[in-house]
Length: 173
Image (tube, rainbow, N blue to C red):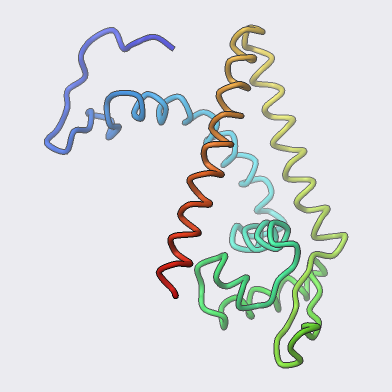
């Protein structure tokens, strides 16, 4: 991606007229807008069947490998009472199971059902189909560079995220 043809006007907060920080991070944010719009478009279609908060809950349970209601609430950044209401709705829809936690009879264990896993699979498939449509318009060199950069970004994100989790755990002690 080349530089903009002329200098962008920068406001007092160091942002250009379109609200984006100049430099690498700003260019990256602009470059990723298409990917974000693609994801939002796929999510909009999925919302016809499952709300965004319910999709987040399903994704969190998938990432956690099942969890207690309190852990789901932590993952979603909501209180346990809200996580419990979300899990009630997802159970009613047949997307998760609610059982007594094996290590604590007073706690509730949540896990995906095959239907819940199918929703996540459908989401991934729809996103992949859209990505294929877009990347077919790229040169092979652009696709290779995109994949290399995206894989590097994913690795770095995991490292940064793990550090943040460790720091947060240390602050709770």
